[in-house]
View: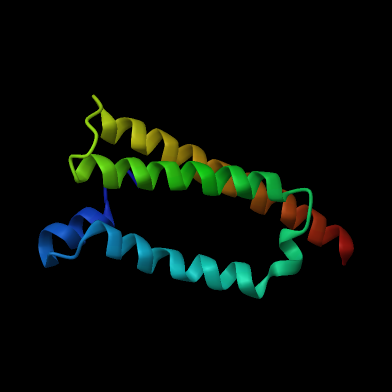
Length: 105
């Protein structure tokens, strides 16, 4: 996450905006949510919601700072910390969901 930023590479190498990259990146998640609605109705969903909020905040911070709309010192560092926190929350969601599904079998 920290060393290889796909959205920055696509912007610099192919002149594809970060917004387009992020939109295409969300398509698999939207499909995943649509196909697995039943799994979203569980107590683990709080971790998923926290993850989506954190990742959304990190993406918003990236887009706003790249667009020079806001200027925050160390915005890249703050963005990566928020992104990593979102990834850990996503990991917690999947871990607890896996445990619940394992118990059902």
